[in-house]
Length: 280
Ligand SMILES: [Zn+2]
Image 1 (cartoon, rainbow, N blue to C red):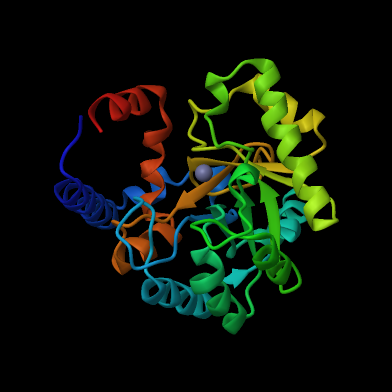
Image 2: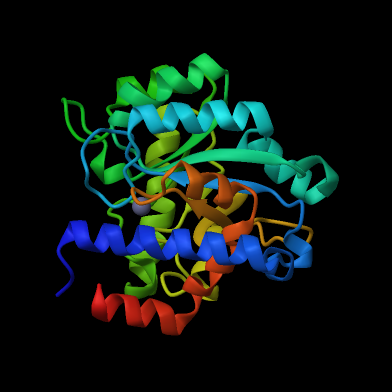
């Protein structure tokens, strides 16, 4: 079930633009920005950087370069490692900072995103699905591409072995996914893997028990895809991120960065997630 893809994209885009305009002109922005989130850390989630229209979170290389240019002019990019340290020690330091992350480990991150990140001298973190890492040319990153990026300002985190939604698995399977992906990456990269990202990562895709398993597996933080910024009371095992999607034009992108669209965090309620899964 679902709308044809292009009308769905158009509908999403229209909704976002309307929200941006309403929020900007009613001053709702200041109400919607949670006090703790104000001046918090923004972690961006990208997926594919390519000219293909799918999946829903694809950003073209041209748009991505425009984003980086805008970020360079207006914000400070820090690594996820620095961000975790600052969140725990000196929250003031994250004010106006952005962390760039990518989920799923698409090979276009190497071909299209990595050269641009290098050009701007920006660090970034890529969350890899270890079962998808392939030696040959494929949609996903290869070990040699990962190695090259590892030596050039890109860090890696685990995003499970199979990308199944953790909340739908048995405890044993959850442990295998979380610990197994860490072990595999540590072996392959010959370094400690400290970052984890929950597959899909909305509020219904993981729970407290799963968070405890992530902690027990000795990760130092975990990223969700719950929408928002991370302020004083940020949970470093359920960090909020701001997903950049195919339907975000440059106007929407800028509004996402300045917090106007923080109101979108209503999407993280269980009711909305259920509604979305039924109708989309
Ligand atoms: Zn993912």
